[in-house]
Image (cartoon, rainbow, N blue to C red):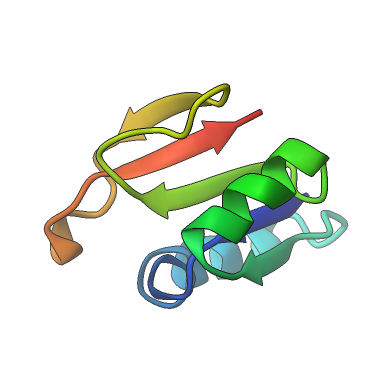
Length: 83
């Protein structure tokens, strides 16, 4: 699974959950690709990542997005983005 995200989300939000998932499912290959939000959207649309998690209030056009309340520490909503 290839997950695209921004650096703050990758460091402060996803690092612990991904580590836990990797321990529970050692055969699952997880790649966390951190870059800016615009590049994350582009990589998602190109199929370079399977899903993306970003801090945003609005989604980019032509991308399905689901809000998740998983980022209260940063005072923002995270959006799980799937193209």
